[in-house]
Image 1: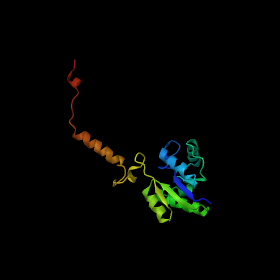
Image 2: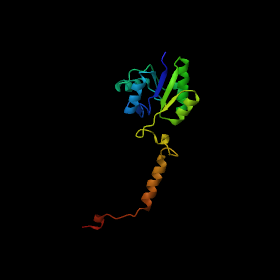
Image 3: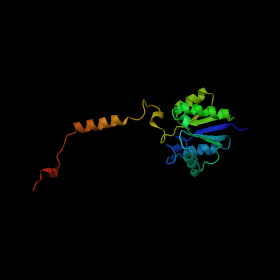
Image 4: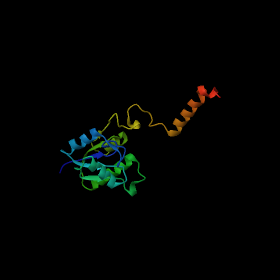
Length: 168
């Protein structure tokens, strides 16, 4: 039996989540390259199996053995813990997971700890800010952005409009 390669749908194959996420072409190439040597399984944090399967079909990804999505019992689980739970499900179903492809360094570390060879997919145009090297924190909170804009507007010189003094 062939070893199994698991690819994360989000951030490896799809920018964002189905149904509207754009395909990541390099991720699609990895999928097609791996399917010749591995039994491919898709891991997703999306909660709608039908939407995820439709996205895969529309983008020409039809050769996977299984798609595992988020179910109602897993809604409270965060990224790495959810992926670890999915790994346990595959192993219990007899899948010999030989390779795990993810864009999340925390998931990659967890999979390596679980004894799975891991491929960390890092695309400069699609990687989330918190996954990029050299970033201390993720994206700036919206409240902080609003505060910066308000502060910048407060210190800016208010220039009257040229036509404001021109009254008939």
